[in-house]
Image (cartoon, rainbow, N blue to C red; front, side):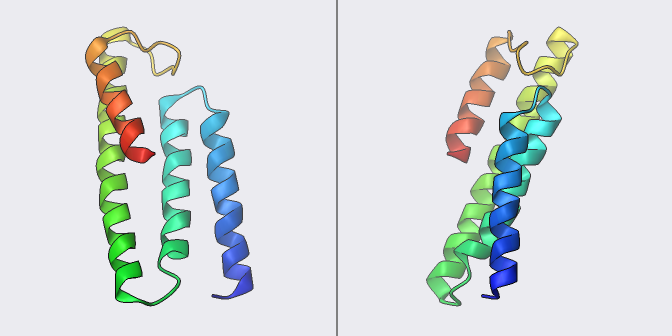
Length: 106
């Protein structure tokens, strides 16, 4: 892998992590997690072995499902509380879905 490309992906990982940690809004937290997902997939599949590509595809599918769950949980929470703020997670369904999404992301 080109050293400049590897540096770009590693910087994107740091940027996504910083955005996710410092966010107060569900959409910015989701955007940070998506930046991390899109930055790590090329790093997983940099060796062009079939198992590495298969692992990258499986990783992408699980992360896409977790992102969908995270957005769905934030929409349910916004619908019930009227706010998109991360600190206002009061509805039990959205709390359970968010916990599941975060567990899938880990």
